[in-house]
Length: 146
Image (cartoon, rainbow, N blue to C red; front, side, top):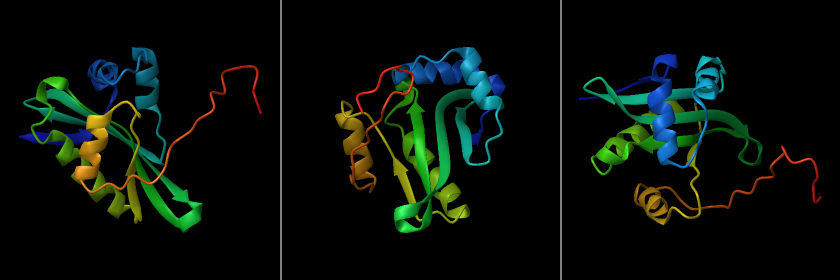
């Protein structure tokens, strides 16, 4: 039976391996630091099956000024490629909906890479509405084109 619990430092290596499957290369030290922080505006969860971490999800809660309401964003969600298409992702999204409602959020949102067409189709199938593009400016660069 799938169990979803708060992530902790003991899960760091499995979380790193899962994030690698999404193309992220955070170090174990960075992941442990993120897991150790107690940000009241975010939650980190793992899904385990028979004691093995098979999925990871991070949520942030924030006030979205344009609609004057609290929102929840899934900032990362990854299911181990060996157990994808078994309903784990759906259970994580349902879990996120519960957490968002508990915090009186008006919306649950998720972002994904433009290249992940199958993931986009999955989210749309689950009822998410494609409403915007996300742009970012890398602030580690010393020169800006602004």
